[in-house]
Length: 152
Image (cartoon, rainbow, N blue to C red; front, side):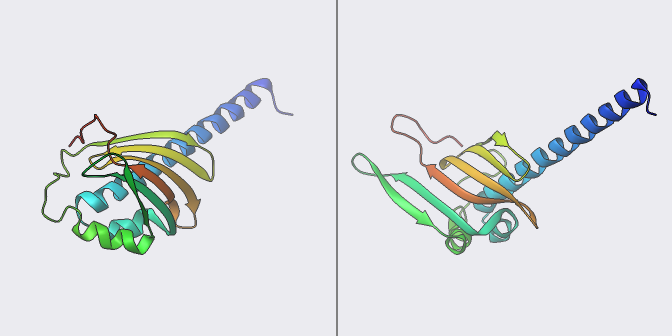
């Protein structure tokens, strides 16, 4: 028969194990989002493959250069790989100092949601745990809102 002390120790061990697993998930989610950002900042399409699910659903709202409003921009996994090859190829955004603020909004055992504030604007990101680990499955983003400046 288990004593109260044994039950307490088993309970503490279980809680510690769950906390460690949650911490590992958070680290993995942050790494996936960092890979996604670095894909663009460093012009590395291989980081898209490491962080993004092949069935990605991505839509963005890009502020018009002239006049008010936004243009809607849909992007597939393949298009994302092509775009990151040239988006920062000239080095206009320094990856070492460029804006990169990641906030994990929610996390369950199979899904997570996060917010990314980057030099190009704000991304709301959905992730899923797959056989290959955490992957980004959908993104909705917009360039900086009127009256705000893009920050490096």
